[in-house]
Image 1 (cartoon, rainbow, N blue to C red):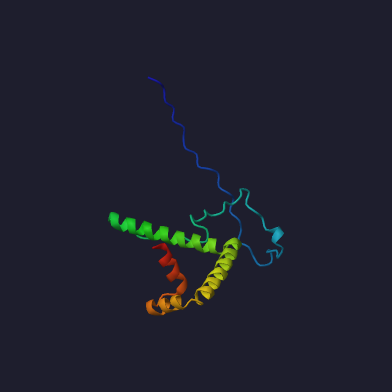
Image 2: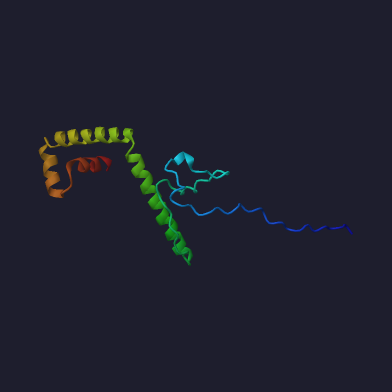
Length: 135
């Protein structure tokens, strides 16, 4: 049989205890504050930027788990859509599309039959024409 040696477990050395600070020894200069020897790690980031995840009770049934996952996915999708909407290109596209819809509404308003159909159905003339064109 091979010989096995057991080494004793030695605890790591502890830092010396510091005396409590009194108000006379505290310097108002931030540069004089001693920094730790090892860098401090930043806390882990949340999975979704700008969101703080909160612990929730674990669902018990597969349906509840699926519902919770679906709700989280919807929330993430809404956050992403809001982020995309704030993009400058998206804002320009929205402005151009709005102008085009206004122009189409004005042109379609010149037609008596379109105005009559709009009045009978209660549907705005632009979607009314788009729906009729898709049939």
